[in-house]
Image (cartoon, rainbow, N blue to C red; front, side):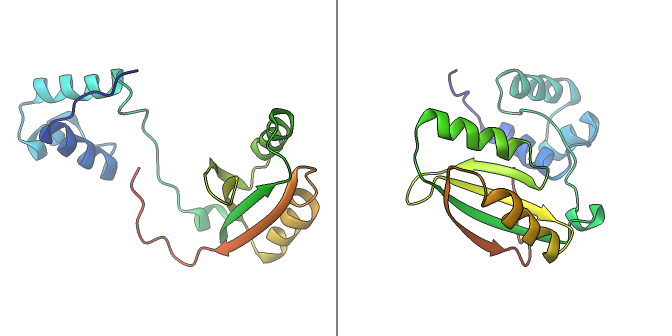
Length: 151
C-alpha cells in the first residue's frame, strides 16, 4: 500500500475528526474551509486509502468500573514463532488487556491493562499473566493521569 499524499486541508480534516468523529459533514466542511461536497470527497478518499481506519468512541475506563490502569512491559523467554503465537493468543483472550504493542529494544511487548481495583490487578498478574509459559519478566507502571491521546 502506498502512502497517500496529504495536503494541509487533509491534515485539518484529520485533526477535526480526531477530536470529534461525529461531526456532520456540513460542520466539518465549515471548520476546514471547504464546501460540503469536496469535503465529503476528501473524507471518503481518506477512508478508502486507509488513512482513516474507522470511527469509535473514547471511553472513560472509570465509568466502566476500570479504576486502575497500568502499562506493563513484557519480556519473553524466547522469540520463536510458536512461543509468540501462544503469548498473543493468551493476551487476546484476556479482557483486562486493552492494548498490546510489539516494540523494539529491551522489551518484547507493552500491554495496557485495565482492572476494577488493585486486588483484581494483583489476581490478573499472579494468576494469569505471570503464569504464561513464555513470559520471562514484567514491569508495571501505574497510569496516574492521561494527559494526551491522539489517534
